[in-house]
Image: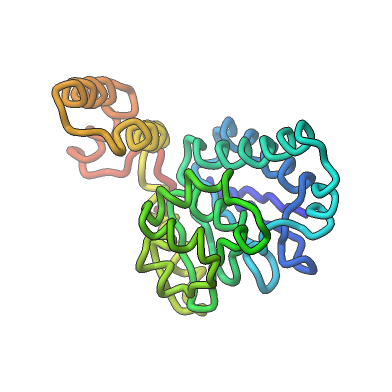
Length: 260
């Protein structure tokens, strides 16, 4: 159902239901939440790659799960939806860089997984669909991440039409950060991993927090003072001092592996 491996500072979280095109249900959502919680505090893990096994990245909700949901009470539906919302929030708030490795179809809730990652690398075979409207539903839990990725105007179109759009369009509108040929997907991910492993772990956590706190705000006096405070604090930190020293001494910082 879910495979998690750790090697050389990189955790690979792979949706492993290829026979169901990696569609998720409450059980898989629970396993993803647990994995993200464990990886957040695992000091041996510097970054996370999220992928799917088989022909699809994620086809959205499992049909059997949808059948069960149809008979839920409001309270049961609320608890069920909160599980998905909490899992996506845990992915989004991981203090470590995340990459979505997108090689095939990404439908409905699967787009939330891609949008909640820091970077999404896809191939021309990838295709996207926010299909909820055609089921009489709403992409509510994934909306904060998808709207952030593609913007409000395009969200209005693709949420309402529920049309399929291809990888080139996903790249154009920001759902994909990088679009590469299928044969180059793993090499592209590996190149990003190399760059990420050269960055300081505490720096990455603080940068992700910075983006969350600054995005959408106007550059007024308050934000100028706040950002000045942040840079002063990180310059005086052990990691900041080590990074500057390594640069001046023309050596690798202590967090870099010998191969990076």
